[in-house]
Amino acid sequence: MSQFSLKPRSGPSPETTSSLPHSQLTQHGPQGVIDELHEWCFSLPHVDNEPSGISVPGSRALVMHEDVECNH
Figure 1 (tube, rainbow, N blue to C red):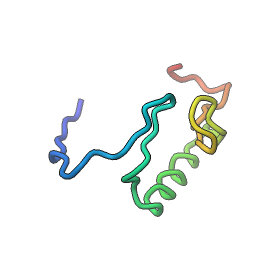
Figure 2: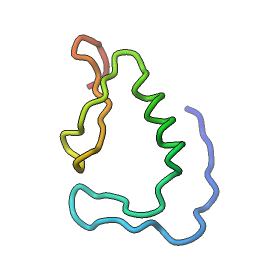
Figure 3: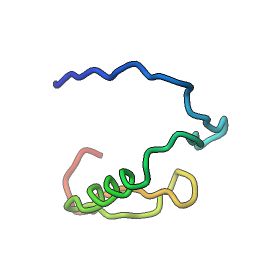
Figure 4: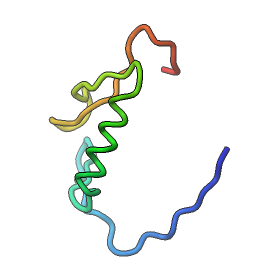
């Protein structure tokens, strides 16, 4: 297993909700980085981009195709 270390967080923690689903309200990453991550994730083979069944409205889920063997 690879190990890496992160620098200690500086500044205040982000604001979050106290209800479920737990959501971060502030300090989101840059939209360009988020868009690139989505593009990469949803380009993976055997993965569909579907609405999340458990998160807030508008959330996206990575869903494996039914016929692909994987860890469930």
